[in-house]
Amino acid sequence: MIIGSKIIYYDHLPSTNSEASRLFKESAIPEGAIICAGYQSAGRGQKDNKWESEENKNLLISIILIPEIIEPDLQFLISETISLGICDFLERYIPVSSIKWPNDIYVNNDKIAGVLIENFIMADSIEYSIAGIGLNINQEIFLSDAPNPVSLKMVSGVSYDIKECLKQLSSDLDKRYKQLLSEDWNTIRSEYKSKLYQFGIWKEYLDGEGKFSGRIESVDDVGNLTITRSDRVSNSYGFKEVTFIP
Image 1 (cartoon, rainbow, N blue to C red):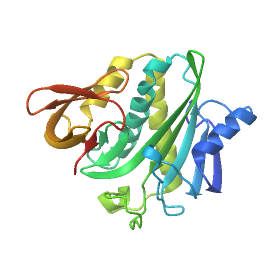
Image 2: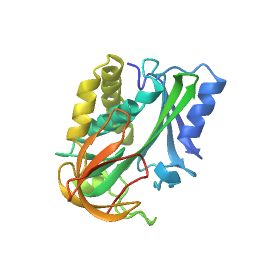
Image 3: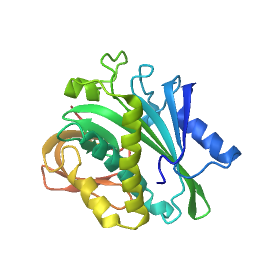
Image 4: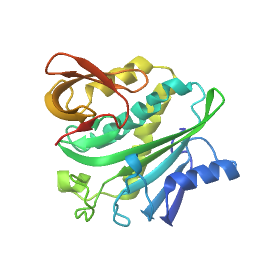
Protein backbone atom coordinates (compact mmCIF):
# COMPACT_ATOMS: atom_id res chain seq x y z
CA MET A 1 0.00 0.00 0.00
CA ILE A 2 1.31 3.44 -0.96
CA ILE A 3 -1.50 5.85 -0.11
CA GLY A 4 -2.35 5.42 3.55
CA SER A 5 0.88 3.67 4.50
CA LYS A 6 1.25 6.34 7.20
CA ILE A 7 -1.44 8.58 8.67
CA ILE A 8 -0.61 11.63 10.76
CA TYR A 9 -3.59 13.08 12.59
CA TYR A 10 -4.03 16.57 14.04
CA ASP A 11 -7.01 17.89 15.96
CA HIS A 12 -6.57 21.35 14.43
CA LEU A 13 -4.45 22.68 11.56
CA PRO A 14 -4.47 25.86 9.49
CA SER A 15 -4.09 23.78 6.31
CA THR A 16 -3.34 20.10 5.72
CA ASN A 17 -1.68 20.94 2.38
CA SER A 18 0.70 23.39 4.03
CA GLU A 19 1.52 20.92 6.79
CA ALA A 20 2.13 18.12 4.29
CA SER A 21 4.55 20.28 2.34
CA ARG A 22 6.36 21.28 5.54
CA LEU A 23 6.72 17.67 6.65
CA PHE A 24 8.01 16.58 3.27
CA LYS A 25 10.70 19.26 3.31
CA GLU A 26 11.72 18.81 6.94
CA SER A 27 11.47 15.07 7.62
CA ALA A 28 11.83 11.65 6.04
CA ILE A 29 8.15 11.09 5.42
CA PRO A 30 7.14 8.26 3.06
CA GLU A 31 5.27 8.65 -0.18
CA GLY A 32 1.56 8.13 0.35
CA ALA A 33 1.57 9.57 3.86
CA ILE A 34 -1.74 11.21 4.74
CA ILE A 35 -2.02 14.32 6.87
CA CYS A 36 -5.50 14.43 8.39
CA ALA A 37 -7.15 17.13 10.49
CA GLY A 38 -10.33 17.22 12.50
CA TYR A 39 -10.60 20.93 11.76
CA GLN A 40 -8.87 23.42 9.44
CA SER A 41 -8.80 27.12 10.25
CA ALA A 42 -7.49 28.12 6.81
CA GLY A 43 -8.44 25.26 4.51
CA ARG A 44 -7.97 26.14 0.86
CA GLY A 45 -9.89 25.19 -2.25
CA GLN A 46 -9.60 26.07 -5.91
CA LYS A 47 -9.58 29.74 -6.92
CA ASP A 48 -8.31 30.65 -3.43
CA ASN A 49 -11.70 29.74 -1.96
CA LYS A 50 -11.92 28.67 1.67
CA TRP A 51 -13.23 25.21 2.48
CA GLU A 52 -15.94 25.12 5.15
CA SER A 53 -15.98 22.08 7.39
CA GLU A 54 -17.58 21.50 10.76
CA GLU A 55 -15.15 20.02 13.29
CA ASN A 56 -14.81 16.22 13.19
CA LYS A 57 -17.67 15.84 10.72
CA ASN A 58 -15.78 15.45 7.45
CA LEU A 59 -12.56 14.21 5.86
CA LEU A 60 -9.86 16.86 5.55
CA ILE A 61 -6.71 15.25 4.24
CA SER A 62 -3.59 15.87 2.20
CA ILE A 63 -1.54 13.12 0.57
CA ILE A 64 2.16 13.29 -0.25
CA LEU A 65 2.91 11.84 -3.69
CA ILE A 66 6.13 11.43 -5.64
CA PRO A 67 4.89 10.66 -9.17
CA GLU A 68 8.31 10.52 -10.83
CA ILE A 69 7.02 9.03 -14.08
CA ILE A 70 4.66 11.95 -14.71
CA GLU A 71 6.23 14.78 -16.69
CA PRO A 72 5.08 18.29 -15.79
CA ASP A 73 3.07 18.72 -19.00
CA LEU A 74 1.02 15.63 -18.06
CA GLN A 75 0.37 16.63 -14.45
CA PHE A 76 -3.40 16.74 -15.02
CA LEU A 77 -3.28 12.94 -14.86
CA ILE A 78 -2.73 13.29 -11.11
CA SER A 79 -5.90 15.33 -10.77
CA GLU A 80 -7.86 12.81 -12.84
CA THR A 81 -6.54 9.94 -10.73
CA ILE A 82 -7.46 11.51 -7.39
CA SER A 83 -10.91 12.55 -8.64
CA LEU A 84 -11.68 9.02 -9.78
CA GLY A 85 -10.54 7.58 -6.45
CA ILE A 86 -12.98 9.83 -4.59
CA CYS A 87 -15.80 8.76 -6.90
CA ASP A 88 -14.88 5.11 -6.29
CA PHE A 89 -15.24 5.71 -2.55
CA LEU A 90 -18.57 7.53 -2.83
CA GLU A 91 -20.03 4.80 -5.00
CA ARG A 92 -19.58 2.34 -2.16
CA TYR A 93 -22.59 4.12 -0.62
CA ILE A 94 -24.51 5.99 -3.32
CA PRO A 95 -25.39 5.07 -6.90
CA VAL A 96 -23.47 7.70 -8.81
CA SER A 97 -21.17 10.71 -8.55
CA SER A 98 -19.57 12.95 -11.15
CA ILE A 99 -16.57 15.22 -11.64
CA LYS A 100 -17.18 18.87 -12.38
CA TRP A 101 -14.15 19.92 -14.40
CA PRO A 102 -11.45 20.13 -13.35
CA ASN A 103 -11.83 18.27 -10.04
CA ASP A 104 -14.88 19.17 -7.95
CA ILE A 105 -16.87 16.08 -7.03
CA TYR A 106 -20.62 16.29 -7.42
CA VAL A 107 -23.65 14.27 -6.43
CA ASN A 108 -26.48 15.30 -8.76
CA ASN A 109 -26.06 19.09 -8.89
CA ASP A 110 -24.42 19.52 -5.49
CA LYS A 111 -20.76 19.63 -4.47
CA ILE A 112 -19.68 16.95 -2.03
CA ALA A 113 -15.88 17.22 -2.33
CA GLY A 114 -13.15 19.53 -3.52
CA VAL A 115 -9.62 18.72 -4.58
CA LEU A 116 -6.55 20.94 -4.54
CA ILE A 117 -3.50 19.46 -6.28
CA GLU A 118 -0.22 21.31 -5.75
CA ASN A 119 2.66 20.10 -7.91
CA PHE A 120 6.17 21.21 -7.00
CA ILE A 121 8.26 21.22 -10.15
CA MET A 122 12.05 21.27 -10.28
CA ALA A 123 13.75 21.58 -13.68
CA ASP A 124 11.81 19.23 -15.97
CA SER A 125 10.27 16.91 -13.37
CA ILE A 126 7.73 16.89 -10.56
CA GLU A 127 9.68 16.79 -7.29
CA TYR A 128 6.54 15.97 -5.29
CA SER A 129 2.80 16.61 -5.24
CA ILE A 130 0.33 17.34 -2.48
CA ALA A 131 -3.22 16.14 -3.10
CA GLY A 132 -5.57 17.97 -0.77
CA ILE A 133 -9.11 16.63 -0.37
CA GLY A 134 -12.09 18.04 1.48
CA LEU A 135 -14.89 15.47 1.49
CA ASN A 136 -18.19 16.16 3.25
CA ILE A 137 -19.26 13.12 5.25
CA ASN A 138 -21.56 13.90 8.21
CA GLN A 139 -22.07 17.68 8.10
CA GLU A 140 -25.70 18.72 7.66
CA ILE A 141 -25.65 22.50 8.07
CA PHE A 142 -23.38 24.74 5.97
CA LEU A 143 -23.01 28.39 6.95
CA SER A 144 -20.81 29.78 4.17
CA ASP A 145 -22.15 31.31 0.97
CA ALA A 146 -21.07 28.29 -1.06
CA PRO A 147 -24.06 27.77 -3.37
CA ASN A 148 -24.57 24.01 -3.32
CA PRO A 149 -22.77 22.00 -0.62
CA VAL A 150 -23.94 18.51 0.26
CA SER A 151 -22.63 15.65 2.40
CA LEU A 152 -22.77 11.89 2.20
CA LYS A 153 -25.14 11.85 5.19
CA MET A 154 -27.47 14.36 3.53
CA VAL A 155 -27.63 12.18 0.42
CA SER A 156 -28.02 8.80 2.10
CA GLY A 157 -29.60 9.68 5.47
CA VAL A 158 -26.93 7.60 7.22
CA SER A 159 -24.17 8.68 9.66
CA TYR A 160 -20.67 7.37 8.98
CA ASP A 161 -17.59 6.47 11.00
CA ILE A 162 -14.96 8.99 9.87
CA LYS A 163 -12.01 6.67 10.58
CA GLU A 164 -13.58 3.86 8.57
CA CYS A 165 -14.28 6.29 5.72
CA LEU A 166 -10.63 7.35 5.74
CA LYS A 167 -9.54 3.72 5.55
CA GLN A 168 -11.84 3.05 2.60
CA LEU A 169 -10.96 6.26 0.79
CA SER A 170 -7.24 5.52 1.22
CA SER A 171 -7.75 2.08 -0.32
CA ASP A 172 -9.66 3.44 -3.30
CA LEU A 173 -7.13 6.23 -3.90
CA ASP A 174 -4.27 3.74 -3.59
CA LYS A 175 -5.75 1.52 -6.31
CA ARG A 176 -6.13 4.48 -8.64
CA TYR A 177 -2.62 5.75 -7.89
CA LYS A 178 -1.14 2.34 -8.70
CA GLN A 179 -3.09 2.48 -11.96
CA LEU A 180 -1.36 5.79 -12.67
CA LEU A 181 2.07 4.39 -11.82
CA SER A 182 1.48 1.38 -14.07
CA GLU A 183 0.94 3.87 -16.93
CA ASP A 184 -2.65 2.80 -17.57
CA TRP A 185 -3.29 6.37 -18.58
CA ASN A 186 -5.80 5.71 -21.35
CA THR A 187 -8.13 4.03 -18.86
CA ILE A 188 -7.78 6.92 -16.42
CA ARG A 189 -8.52 9.48 -19.12
CA SER A 190 -11.44 7.50 -20.51
CA GLU A 191 -13.07 6.95 -17.11
CA TYR A 192 -12.51 10.57 -16.12
CA LYS A 193 -14.24 11.72 -19.30
CA SER A 194 -17.14 9.32 -18.73
CA LYS A 195 -17.75 10.80 -15.28
CA LEU A 196 -17.65 14.47 -16.29
CA TYR A 197 -20.51 16.53 -14.91
CA GLN A 198 -22.77 17.78 -17.74
CA PHE A 199 -20.82 15.80 -20.33
CA GLY A 200 -22.59 15.82 -23.70
CA ILE A 201 -25.53 17.89 -22.40
CA TRP A 202 -26.44 21.35 -23.71
CA LYS A 203 -25.98 23.83 -20.85
CA GLU A 204 -25.22 27.49 -20.24
CA TYR A 205 -21.63 28.68 -19.76
CA LEU A 206 -19.81 31.98 -19.45
CA ASP A 207 -16.45 32.90 -20.98
CA GLY A 208 -14.63 36.12 -21.87
CA GLU A 209 -17.08 36.79 -24.69
CA GLY A 210 -20.19 36.32 -22.58
CA LYS A 211 -22.88 33.76 -21.90
CA PHE A 212 -23.41 30.95 -24.37
CA SER A 213 -25.07 27.57 -24.82
CA GLY A 214 -22.63 24.71 -25.21
CA ARG A 215 -21.91 21.03 -24.77
CA ILE A 216 -18.82 19.51 -23.14
CA GLU A 217 -17.03 17.30 -25.65
CA SER A 218 -13.70 16.29 -24.12
CA VAL A 219 -10.71 17.09 -21.93
CA ASP A 220 -7.26 16.97 -23.51
CA ASP A 221 -4.07 15.53 -22.03
CA VAL A 222 -3.07 18.79 -20.34
CA GLY A 223 -6.51 19.28 -18.81
CA ASN A 224 -8.07 21.81 -21.19
CA LEU A 225 -11.85 21.52 -21.56
CA THR A 226 -13.41 21.48 -25.04
CA ILE A 227 -16.93 22.87 -25.34
CA THR A 228 -18.90 22.97 -28.59
CA ARG A 229 -21.16 26.00 -28.82
CA SER A 230 -24.64 26.04 -30.30
CA ASP A 231 -23.17 27.52 -33.51
CA ARG A 232 -21.01 24.34 -33.73
CA VAL A 233 -17.77 26.21 -33.01
CA SER A 234 -15.56 24.35 -30.52
CA ASN A 235 -13.41 26.21 -28.02
CA SER A 236 -10.73 24.92 -25.66
CA TYR A 237 -10.58 26.37 -22.14
CA GLY A 238 -7.93 26.31 -19.48
CA PHE A 239 -8.66 26.53 -15.77
CA LYS A 240 -10.65 29.64 -14.80
CA GLU A 241 -11.36 30.52 -18.45
CA VAL A 242 -14.96 29.29 -18.45
CA THR A 243 -17.69 29.27 -15.80
CA PHE A 244 -20.55 26.81 -15.38
CA ILE A 245 -23.88 28.61 -14.98
CA PRO A 246 -26.27 26.88 -12.55
